[in-house]
Length: 163
Image (cartoon, rainbow, N blue to C red; front, side):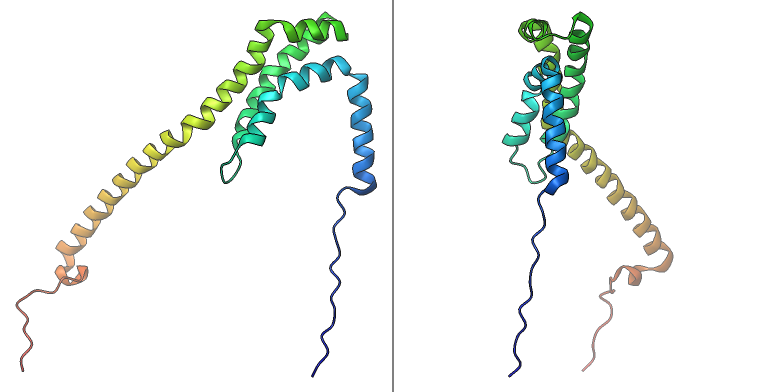
């Protein structure tokens, strides 16, 4: 009997020193830009909810809600920067209902697109497929007229098998 060799499976690193370095830099930046971080975190809550609550196969709700949510958060952050970049102003901006409407309204548009576009696209694809089937049937009828019924696999019943 041949002895089986043990094969070592090497585990992949999950970040290593590069991941740690990026985490430290990101954390330092978040602390230095505390007001922007506060507005960003509060504004991007719908994206986090969309990502963690998505049960679909491909988990695409975050990809639909996220960019539109960011588009709504960006003008609010720009407003924060134009007023002065302090934590007090960030709290004022976060508590302003119109600013929340910008941030969460754009996320709602993304959620609306995520929910309503697949049925609309399926209706379009069904009608396109029906048109294609009709076109193929017309081509098939033209071939049958030109070449006869044998081309379609139809055999005339006049043929009999003699014993």
